[in-house]
Amino acid sequence: MADILEVKDLSLHYLTRFGQKVHAVTNVSFTMKQGEILGIAGESGCGKSTLVNGLMGLFIPPLYPTGGDVLVSGESLMNRTPEDVRLNVLSQKVSMIPQGAFNALNPTRKIKDIALDVIAAHSASKKLNEKEVYARLRERFDLFGMETERILNSYPIQLTAGERQRSVIGISTLLNPKVVIADEPTSALDVTTQKVVIKMIFDLLERNIFSTMIFITHELPLLRHVAHNIAIMYAGEFVECGTSTQVVHDPRHPYTKALMGAMLSADAGQKDRKPTTIEGAPPSLAKTITGCRFAERCPNARVCEFKHKNQSMRMVGERLVRCDYVE
Ligand SMILES: Nc1ncnc2c1ncn2[C@@H]1O[C@H](COP(=O)(O)OP(=O)(O)OP(=O)(O)O)[C@@H](O)[C@H]1O
Ligand SMILES: [Mg+2]
Image 1 (cartoon, rainbow, N blue to C red):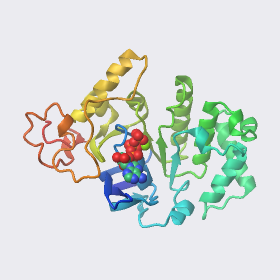
Image 2 (tube, helix red, strand yellow):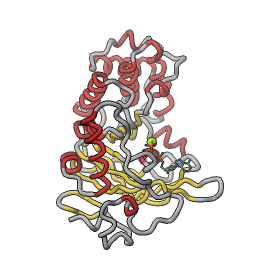
Image 3 (cartoon, rainbow, N blue to C red):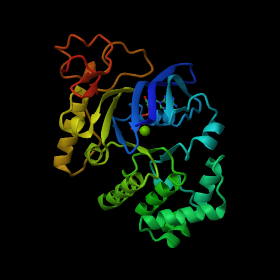
Image 4 (tube, protein in one colour):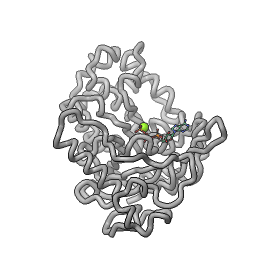
């Protein structure tokens, strides 16, 4: 089966006002096939949102591509103007479900008009008229057992959080994009609503309304149920990449282990669950980093003979791990 998404050695940097480069994403490579859900997890500042922009080919200063390529169904998204990306990539090839559904929806427009605005902004080739947009919206919302007429004729403030989030998902996938990227789509929702939203995502995937999905979240326990594969990101790099079962139940990279350990204890405690904290801090991405990026926080560092060497991804069993120490 051909790859829907192919990311090859993608590196991205910000150029600060002082001319300094912040290497937010370094040599990220992965591929995705039809029907696949990839979860990406890592602590704050590791480069997840920057990577999302790169995956849409969206480079708005101060963000620049350093190197590498992103291909959707064999077509590169690099070297395009933001206008070209808006008209020919967003919503059609790659669609993003934004973090806060409430902020994503214009409060002064009804849901049906917001959908019309989105389609008008992002469909140079697939021009749909107003009637066609409404028809498709109705069909989608009906499919998910939503109260279609009421929701389409409501302003965002008149809807529940779950209805808003489902409306955003419905609108973002209206043009049947190949890749859908969800940046923390359920983090502001209660558990019951989370389940409804996740079921909707699975339904859309099953019906081929979109082909692949990237799910970014801090909630690793959730990722375990949603994603087929998981990539763990640390200081701009992928450090472990494997099936959800491999990564969650048998993590190999010391950072993944630390992340899982912190998550599991938080899981057991339940009350005041906080984002994971692991002692120490990741290295600054504004400096050239040599050697292992995790060494300063790694429990193996004292005995590790490889820590001064730049670490590359290699196969450990059947998954990729960026650590020469682990077997
Ligand atoms: N405009 C900018 N200029 C310079 N550096 C930036 C800029 N935006 C982000 N960065 C840096 O790039 C790195 C990656 O940031 P990014 O927002 O992608 O992280 P993230 O993993 O999405 O974090 P979070 O989980 O908090 O959303 C961070 O070190 C951040 O400080
Ligand atoms: Mg982010």
